[in-house]
Each structure stands twice: as structure tokens, then as C-alpha cells.
Image (tube, rainbow over all chains, first blue to last red; front, side):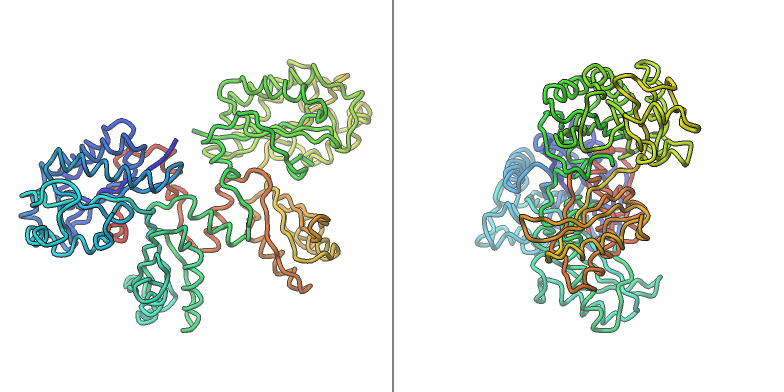
Length: 314
Length: 314
């Protein structure tokens, strides 16, 4: 059974009854599973994590749009986090048994439907984008809701789907496909923020580091230590262990050790298994060797595999 | 849904129609999944890997006994591998959502049933054993089928269940519970067998190494290299990465490098995730953070988890 993840970000993080109402509507779509949701009141924003197959996820996103547009008015919305619309961003993420192309197709199909049904302009982003100038979310969202009418009137900013002017209360939405994002932090046994910031600068893409790393140095005041706080945006091309080892080596330059690392929220098993493969020098490992994968895939097809005698009870 | 693995070893590895017939009968038990099976003709032995919940697995093992006892006559059985019975060994292995105690209870329950129904003496082993002298399979099997009648008559060798003399054609069986066994090999970039043997001796329990490692040095003649070939019998207490690092360090003593390592057959995801946790210094990681685990466990319970803003689309 293919698994796609979908992580709608909505511009409401203060009114619990609104967020719960939206989650509730989504949860009732058969085949769409709500794995997590959480709200940030200073951002005035909520993140909902869904999983399922393409059909149920599309239905869930349509239901989410309907409810969110009815409940959220961006004309009175304030919050720290930049936003363009009531339903601000909807990424589809390939997890298992599904390709990026499948997710791109799902993003476009969903974008077309919500744009038509709710009269909301939609921009496609990341892997679903067909225009390099409109690939990054930051570029699409620049100017935010308040600047949206002017932006949409400018050259090159007609939306991919829907009307050419903002929805009065719901603005515009950004829908697309991307790899799973892993929130990964490494804590250092020092209180020197400059060290964390220098290390962050060496590993992040924007200042010459790894292609799929965003990073910043922050202080964990309650513990008296600093942290290299990262988003890994493609763990296949920039693996977690490689980033960890680069941070560790860089820290040594300053006489600093890695205290520990942490993954915030969910992580695909494949990202951790890749780290194990690398640490163990497992060069020919196949995912079908993971017992749980074999169990999910069925088995019972009677295929004979030659076991080495090591597996015979001795 | 709890998952138990069960790995019956039967004393037939030459007559494909007999093995296929047994696998076929087991496959037809609802809820019991055949993940793999394979035969070794020089050992004249087959290994079947099943998975499921306790009830279906017990039913599958009973069906396997019935068929195997009808088809296998140990009086005419020859092969390199030591054996005591037609159904030689049946370990139950906790994989997910199930404790070792559950597997011990299942082993005893299954042992009692097959002993009564088929009049076969059964010895309990490993975690299911109640007698330290009868914990190791090697000790129970010593003397093999040919010496069984004499052994059973000796002091301390009355079986745990069933008659006090061997079954005429099926001998006796050994049933128990143990941790998953991982067949793990590390290849060295040398052809010096003495190095592989010395390293094997340092890491294996029997000569002073890790508690849950069996190891030997072997030559891979076709590649002109040597291998430290191991069985890891408890990856929780003796983790894969710790064994790998010990072998790697020991190899350096002889100026030898690790070329690669390999896992033969299936491995529980937890064993690899533990290696990733260790390599990445993930000190507070929870298994529920693995996306696939969350998916299997259901989700959709509406519990709100506080996400760090790192997971908000930036």
C-alpha cells in the first residue's frame, strides 16, 4: 500500500475550536489519517500531518480548504510567521511505494480542484513548480497577504490555477511536492553561541554547505548550552549521518564536543536505516531485509530464498 | 497488532515435494504468514520463517508437526547438521508489541499441545527453559537422534512434555523462545584467515568476547578475502554497531581494514534504528517518532503534540 504524507499549514494557531473543527473534518475522510497536529500561538499557525493514499488525501485537503476558508479571515490575521493564505502551504511527500512524480501529479490535481471549487488562486512550488522563479516557498510568499494583490498583478505572477486576483478573505495558497523534511538538532557542550553559529554556517546550503541543509545556531538558555538547529530537506541526497559527522568534526576545531542530537517529530524509517547502513558499512543491504517491511509487503508467496547456514539453529 | 516470529527447523532438505507440502499446509493457516523458507541439502534441513499473532502461529506449528511427522523418518535421515527430531527446533521470537514472557507462554502452550497430540517428547530451551542445564540447544541435542533413547533414560533428561521415550520415527523436538537472531558478517580486505580467526575469537562469547555473539573466521575463496561470520543472539544487549566497531578496531591491530559488512536474511528494524541512534548520538529518540510505526499504530486519536517551529514550512 503506497503511503503519501501531506502537511497542510493553516493560518490559525490561537482559536482551538477552529483548529479542532478543521482537524475533525479531515479525520472523517475515510482513508486519510491524521498523524499529528499542533498549533503555535505566536506564529498564529497550525500544522497538520496527514497520511494515506492519493485519493483520500485529495479529499481531505479539499475538506480542509472548505472549512478553513469559512473560518479564517486573513484581513484580521496577525502572527510572527509569514503567510499568504488561510490555507497557506500544502506539501505532498512521498513516503513508501510512491514516487515524487506521483506526488507532483497529486499536487497539481488537488490544486486545480481547490482553485476551481473555492475560487482561490494557487501557486505550485518545489518539485511541482514549472517555473524556477516560483520554486522556493520564500519567493512565492514574499510580500505576504498584504502585498498579494499588487504581486499578482505583476509580470510573471499569474497563479498556476484559479482567479488572477486574491480571494478576499483567504488570499492565495501554495501547493506542491517535496521530500520529507527532518527537523534535526545537534546540542554542543558549550554555551558559546558563536561556535554554534559558525558551525551552522559551514553546514547550511546558503553559506556554502550541504545542498539540502538549512541551519542556524541557537542558545538553549535553560540548559546553558547551544544548539545547531537544522532542517534536512532531502535525506537521500544529504544523509543525516553525513551532516552529524560534519558538525562533530567542525565542533572539534573549537575544542567543543557533541553532547547529543535530536530528531523533532516524525522521521521516515529509511532515513535512520540509511544512517545504520553507513555506520555499519552495509554495502548491499536491501530494504526488503527489514522484517517489518517484509511483513507489510505480504510474504506468503512461496518464493524460496537461499539462507546461509548461519540462520539455521546451531 | 503484536508480531511474533517463529522459525521451525525441520529435518528434511532434499525432497522438495515434502518441504513444499509442509510449507503449503502452514500457509493455509489463517493469520500465519510464511515470510521465507529455504532448504540446505548437505544439511538435509529446511528453515521456515513464519510471522503472526500467538493463536495463528500455534495452529501453524501444530499443522507443521502433523505433516512433518507423517513425512519424515529419522531412522533413515542423514545430513551434516545435528538433529534430534523430525521437527527439530521451534523458536518463538518477540518482534513488536509483544514481550519475551508472551513468547515463553506461547512456546510452553504449543509444546504441551504437540506433545499430547503427536506423542512426541518435547524439551523447552533458551528463555522457555526452566533448567539451566537444558537452556542451550547444543546441550539438549548432544547425542542426536541416534543417542536419544539412552539420553532420555538418563537422570535429568525426562522431557518437559510428552512420553519419556523417543517417538519411533520423529525423535524429540525442542521448542522455546529467544531474541531475534541476526546473521551478521564483516568482510576484511585481506586474505589472511588467521586475522579473521583472531578477531572472531576476540568478539565471541565463548572465548571472552561479547555475551551475545557467536563468531568464526572463514575464507571467501572466490573473492580472495576473509570474513568474520557471526550470529548476534540479542541485539538489544549486544548491539550490532558495538560489534562492528570492535571488529574494526581489532582489525586495525593487524593493519587490516573493514571492506564492508552484510546482514544475511531478515533483521528487525529496531536493530538498525538502534545503530542509527548510537551513530547519531540520539539520546532521547522514541520509536513512535518513526513515521511508519506511527502509521501502523493508527494515529488519528486527535492527541495534540507540540511541534517545534522547525516543522513549520519556512
